[in-house]
Image (cartoon, rainbow, N blue to C red; front, side):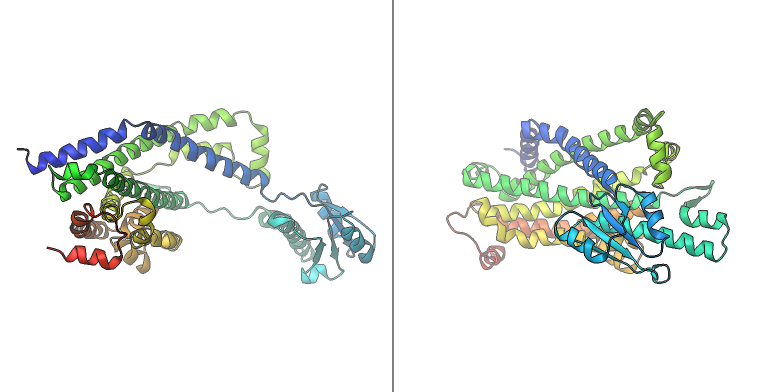
Length: 434
């Protein structure tokens, strides 16, 4: 007769092999990162190309005799000078002969206030284009009026660029705090998506086995707890396999990033012009980033641990929900209490990233149901004290044991219940059964 351990291992092995060998797993493992790269690459490219862009062309009625000329010289595709009256321009807008017009009165240099008249629409690019250009012109004119030197005017136009340095025992090195904060965002959202995805896999698998009466056959040779635990661990191993593949692929792409960037940027005069005029990083800065930016191995270890910890907690609860219903449509009401603790930390990620060492961030990241998302975001964004990490590990382990105990009591009754959509009252009764 097989021991308890061998039964659980058999269930784990079955769940893992059946999922890994499926076409869905193979396709999602390969296509998912390509889809993410394609989607984000498209969004970034479109954003960069359309930043400040507008199809509107605006007539400038300039009563100062100074602003309009400079405004038009900056972008003749958007602005042109007119001597027509305000009423004539209104009629042209109403008849769709003109997109819009701007009246620059003789006090514009003192007040900085002006009106743009259109038939409506135009988007954010339309407004920002006018505001940015007119603001620059006014600032430059005011500086010249007070006799500011050209070097000061150039400094104002160029702006200020701050580079942070991290102090180490060896000296100091560049501190990519902003990039690491974005990494924290990304890892937090990734764990959020993975917990939902694999938790749903567990719930769906339980519902299918229950609907097909397969679980009755399995239950004849293994206890309900063994079935649930084996399923949770088996699908968790599938998730870990997929995540490890993606991490390896990501590291390969990152290490090759400098070479790829150099191939695309070499002898690219257009890119250099864009970098100079739009205050964007030039080729040398981008290559320097790929050569010097590194991700600590501890961030990867933390990501894997908190992903697995969050998965085990939530998948056991999803398994309990799956055992309580006969079909997936009936699970929506019962999944809300399980899904809510996954959603709440996503709302707090911006606050945590703004001040990862603050009291609120610390307290929220130590709450076991929030830790998988918020703690890994904090670890990526900064230096989290070791005692906080260890405390979160202990709390997560204790929470997993409690969730597993709770889910097992629901699972053992619900897995063999058919024909009735359960309520929360029914689940409480199942939990209290000895």
